[in-house]
Length: 362
Image 1 (cartoon, rainbow, N blue to C red):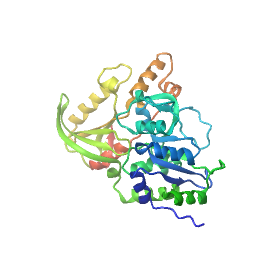
Image 2: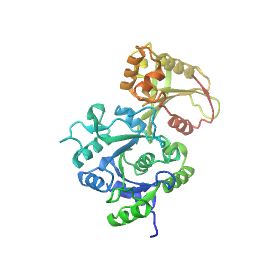
Image 3: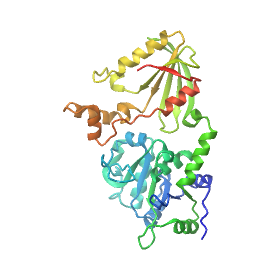
Image 4: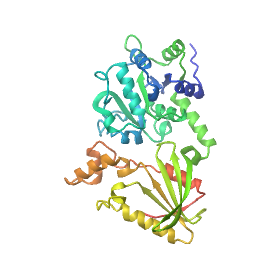
């Protein structure tokens, strides 16, 4: 039987309609296919379908940012998985109806994971759904189903959290490409491959302005401060859903612009913590760009508390540091990366401002 893949647009339309899609990986990798559905649309009916036609081992791929917001550390830091699948601790929705294993309960957990109003207390650990941390670079960085699921959610304009499980035959063996295609035809579901998704993203990236692909400008206002008078521009981060700001002195454009990339730090900036120098560094940067004849920019990156691990995890790391661990070891002891920040949004903001090269304030 000839296997005909659906277009990426057909896949995205199905996801927006709340239907699952089937995604295959390379024959020389796992040679398996996964059913993927948007977590925000995970109904009891579709979860029951996934449990019936997959292994039942249902995972929830999401961005690193979302996993940090929900306080979901890695299940095991030193993974022995050759594909380095980033499992976190398992979870259930706190207000589950029964034990958490039913289709209804797992659907509820999925919707809680995708809900922006949910937090760490919205979940109980361990549970019956396994979140996965996707690489920020998506399938162009790691060609796995985890990244494919999150990339598809982003392309569809949905919350970047999915539900996913591997398709199996009635005898328990893994479905291969032709069997997956037959299943797609049977249930009228689109089917594509990670290779097809990679090609789509590569072509899309080459056609789009990198800054408009990553960020969306939302607002600008005047900002008088004790350091001087500034303009502040607010941006929405399409990839992480964080809000970032550019604090601008003068009209800096072109080359050799004074710039500070500053990660959010409530303990250092608002509370005056002596455990870091973030507060004085921010004050110094604003003084410096206000005084520079050419002007300059402080790009304030939100969602990067504690090198990107989040405020609560940062406080846990503080407690371990009081026991003698350094920053890196404390993060690793919590099952978290030593450095979880990335600066794609900052680059996009600089491009939006017309800045070609910088003098970086450290």
